[in-house]
Image (cartoon, rainbow over all chains, first blue to last red; front, top):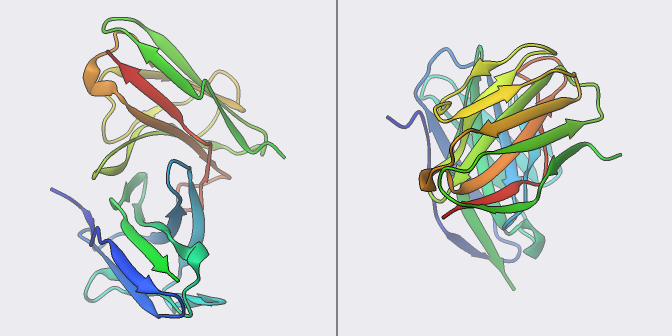
Length: 108
Length: 113
């Protein structure tokens, strides 16, 4: 049973577009959530932590919806350099699960 | 700053051979992790450590052993490699809790023939 699910994509968007990804999780007791970015054949790198109140970092906004058990990532004004795979993570005590990732390609 | 360093970067083994992957971090982090990443399956936690001298099983521990004799090092061992262990292995660390962001090494590509 997958505990963290993401739409694998790929999402192909033009530069300047706004794109949003969702990630659903099954454990209602999960405590912490993160978004990581992974470029092809590279290691994951932290993009954002996801706070209950939602948080924003420049063009990126993360939201948590506990009632529906999903987190979201919104990217505004997409850049070519945003092309990557985006991984969501949920953490509960010492159990941590990564989603399989959503692939984004931003085209000129 | 080196951060998290993994060695080797690439390795090809024959079925039944053994090897050890080394992870070293210079951030004085308490927690360290070993993952494997396979196409379409995302990262899966193999083993982790909450401090020097401790280890614990993750989601997919079978066929692997780990040791954390020094705080900065976390070793992953394959005693008898199998083709199903062909994967990309990532090591990561976090400061003092699993609820904190993790810093990843750049991975080890392992092929078992």
